[in-house]
Amino acid sequence: MDFNFSDSIVLWYIENKRDLPWRNTHDPYKIWVSEIILQQTRIAQGLSYYNRFVQRFPTIAQLAEASEDEVLILWQGLGYYSRARNMHAAAKNILEKHNGIFPSSYNEIRSLKGVGDYTAAAIASFAFNLPFATLDGNVFRLLSRYFAIDTPIDSCEGKKQFASLSQQLLNPAKAALHNQGMMDLGATVCLPSSPHCDECPVSSSCLAFSQNSQNEFPVKSKKTKQKERFFLYVKICDKGYTYLHRRSAKDIWKGLYEFPLIEWGEELTDEKLFDALATLLDQFQITTVNTVHASVAHQLSHQKILARLVEVEGSIRVGNSDFIKIRENQLGDFAVSRLTELLINSKSLNYSLSLHPIK
Ligand code: SF4
Image (cartoon, rainbow, N blue to C red; front, side, top):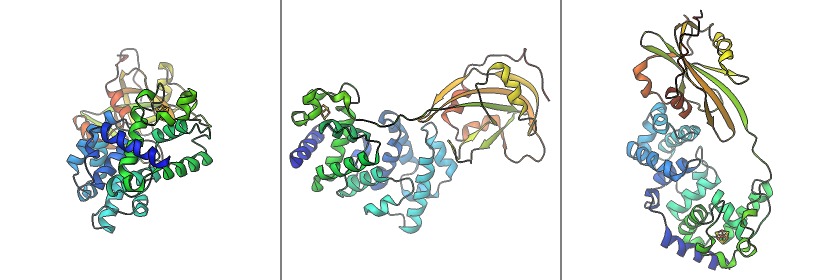
């Protein structure tokens, strides 16, 4: 059955493969870039980033020699910025240790920063046709339905069970085609809701299809807890200049720039804004609050951020080195989070007349 299964997948893939730039190459560098971009990003959004990335950094050496800021600017808007930082660090490592040549063994690929089991198997099989099965969310879903497996896919037991099963199903001689077929079939036919079973090449032996129980799989054991955070960004206008801080803490958006930030324990209503702004006064002198923007909600995978932006007149206090001073028209030269972009373009509530100057 295993060989028939794999043959069906491979045949289906050859006829239905999506025309994507990273599918028409065996260059491990380009496959690596595409896989890292697509880790948390839909193809429709990732495609333009991929094209810009490989155009700007066509080789590992060019990526390794770029500054981190340059890499992050290209990544701006994609989120999960640690992916870009890890890739940059790994490119430097490949340049130093492998003379700029992408490693060709699974273990060496797996040891690159930011490369986990799935990405290593994808690069190893797509670029070098090495017999390592890829197991992403699409493949978990497809296999759990095909075999009607109710072991939770997010449990240790489930991960082991599915890893072993996907490896057994792989035709080692056609690792690249099999893996790409499994992933594409999961992404385009075995959809999370309303799978297109009538178009599926393995429907005749799919247990969930025969039992009409597709919606019961895959099984998950836990729900991810959502954390709520409340941010107030303060754009300080200082005679054509403003101030940015580079995030360095072990938190979201490490390496990106942002306006001075106050994180608050509860939602920042209009009444709370002055209390929050007061916490900045040891670092900045604030003379006037010019503009208050409406709240913007921003959803990340495990946290929801409710943020506001206020624009004030002011200046930095002497001796404060946490911020860099830039011309306001230089803002576009710095990599910022999607949230900061949204806030800059958010609706201004024009409260300037009702708020009082604070010192
Ligand atoms: Fe998924 Fe339906 Fe194919 Fe089964 S028959 S693998 S449920 S698309």
